[in-house]
Length: 388
Image (cartoon, one colour):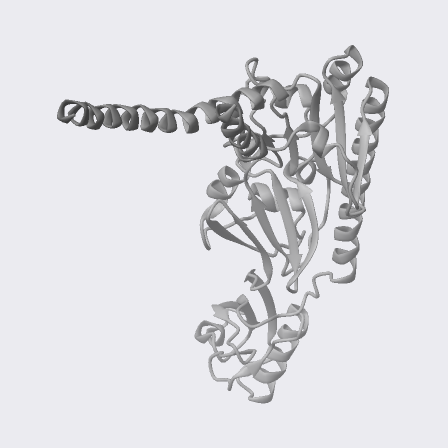
């Protein structure tokens, strides 16, 4: 009887601590008790198909909103066309005198090329025989007129005609990705999101060049568009390349590489618990296959649980009854979302076996101690009997 009373506390302690076993985790029944802010739903094939359709609809709406936001921003902030500090200019002058010594000998109107000239931080340029001339804030045509007037006032040329051409814009679009950054100067036709991502249509070697930009793009999955320190929109790279989305000067594109859908697979009922990445929304069955399927020795085959966040801020627990055809077929249709958690617990008998093993491991030192104590007592009693 003493042995029974000794074993019962040990068994109770072992059974009470079974939830603390490494990789054990809570049981499915425990997780399926409804809590605040949690929505529990048993999935069927029909519900899984409806959920997948709803998910695709939400994604199409999100892409449409992002595209509309980018187009609206580009419309509100178009390229102004005025010169700015840092612009590189090519200036040509036509005149009959002054800068053209050959014109006095009867050669007629002669063109003089000035430049390249860079607009300094104060918005001014320096030209021969003229003081610094402010051109920032003027269009190229207005700057050309100001140059003509300045030479006329100084009587250096007779009827000068000027032309100002921007050969390198200080304004443009920045593209960040794969540890590199690329500056794409503005062009007369502007930039679209697809052109900027692929680094074509006039990208120069001001930083890493179009080839590096294009190679970085192939490893990206998402692009964030930012302007004036704020996030405007996020789009999958495939959608960004497929659509004609105009950009505005000063926008910054940040390309993010990595799997857009990541799923955490947990529970000792799984063969290979880990975090898995996917290129898009995939069925629950594909996640299970990637993780090696359920562990035949430990898995609770009654339930497969999938947690994922809802747009409302609540957490949804999708329950797949693995012992029925309905739950199995639902897993073929139900699409996982980013940051989902797929969980398969151990079956109850496995936890009991672990508890019994722990009981035996705890009881073994006691048995050994009793054996040693008995041997020592016997050794002491023998000399005492001999003395008698």
